[in-house]
Length: 420
Image (cartoon, rainbow, N blue to C red; front, side, top):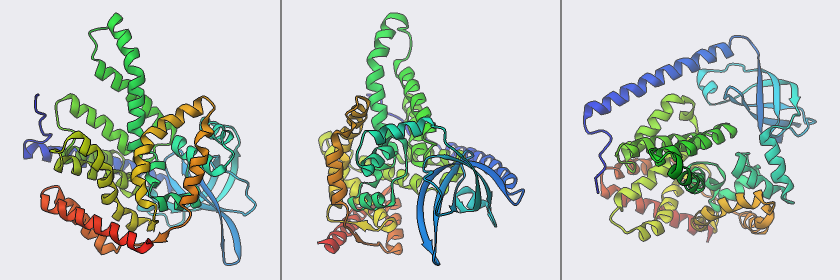
């Protein structure tokens, strides 16, 4: 077998790549800053935005609605409205907003703005229609919300977020590389026999791998646009494209160089993702998968398949406790749920297509009930920074890799002790 080569064999190539990324980043930031100046040109601005979240809040003897919105230009912001405002979740609004004292960082991340709703678009979009179809397939609104999150990237209700955080399966409901991988495999299995049949008769000279990949990539690209490009999905799609290009040229895919290249290129083109928690969590998951495959490449495939989910769980647990702080006695079972999800996800899609989408409602309701109770366990920030330092060291030395595993295992034992 021909051995695949590394991406950067010379320091000069590495520095040329860094320079190119910095150049792209400079252009991207210049465009964003110019848009920021135009947006801040007047005291108020007219925007069209989709409602991501809507909930009621009380403060100082006053009750009002809080809306989280995403504009057609990619801006994410919060605003408030009267308590009497109708349910506008997933609908498109036309608003006049007053982004007082908005700086460039706030423009790139999430900001608050006073607003006045000018119009509510009641027309049914394709996404709203799909969400309505999903709701009609389920009697329980929580189950419908789960499937909407899985298929259309609809936000989960706050109670469900906490429930699935207690169970350690929040990553399964946020569309990312895991889902993209399953969808890629499904599309490939569907297209391969169709393409082979046509290729054998009409174009035997074509490169089947390239053509099928392009078909899969274009399908996933439009799906990503349909979902309004969630950060974790942008990361996954970017790595999919970069990974295929490198694979097609005989370059190693499972390497930290590949991950570094992908993250740097994606951030260069989309600097907003630098402030996205979802993007960094998604990239971290890939980092620990690569770390396992690099350090334990001597194991046979069966052992790697068995140990990888356990490794990823232990490695990502410090992130979960440092950021979300939720844990329960059922949290470790997420290793099993994650493995079963590979079968559940495509099967659930098929069942919804044939009007049997409610087949898994009872197990999902049981899972929701299981995750109702949990405890708050917070990882000390300095310990978390130490963990990140060990993670970087593990790229270069096996000693740090074993130290990393010991640290993650200790965090797991501490969490179990607190709920036992």
